[in-house]
Length: 114
Length: 114
Image (cartoon, rainbow over all chains, first blue to last red; front, side):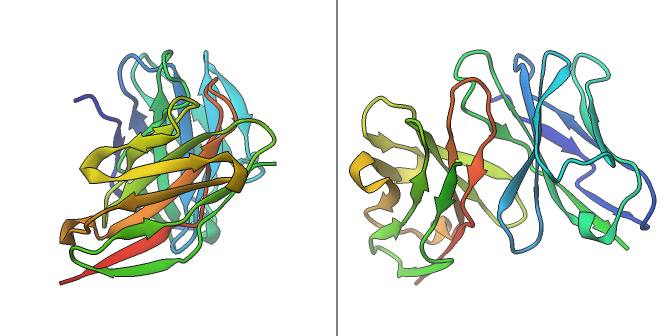
């Protein structure tokens, strides 16, 4: 069964460093998303992406964040200068042209900023 | 604005007992509703979804949920809990079927006692 994959599974970084989180969505999906879950809190929407541009972004998704689909398979989230409060589990999700409302999630990347 | 409220951050049941996890939503338009399950150290797995068809929705692992518009609820049930059901359960809402964001509740951790 097709699934969303994410790398790395864990990342530890120093405050102020740049990190890139990678996702491979389900191959025929066209809608892509990033969410995050700070430990003990709810899953929060960050950004959605369709047709090579951002469809919607939350207040959390400030200028420190960017997304890119560099090729036909990967979807990345970059944090330019990490802060302590960026420590969280980051989930990638994708949905298809049919049943656009149904999002399938990857296993997540746990980011720890020291 | 959409919101989701899950009553009870922790629910504990005995093996074989009924599972009832509560979810109430607010939405200005007919919603699309979802339940996701998160097993320890794993990503979010879709359990079931309501997309304006039948109000009683059956999902994987014996779970089902009923959409009640008058009560703005989408409670998740399972007649007989199994030890393997222990996980965190998230209710989510989307206001469209055009690839829009999901808004999540705060989650309910289900424990199953032998």
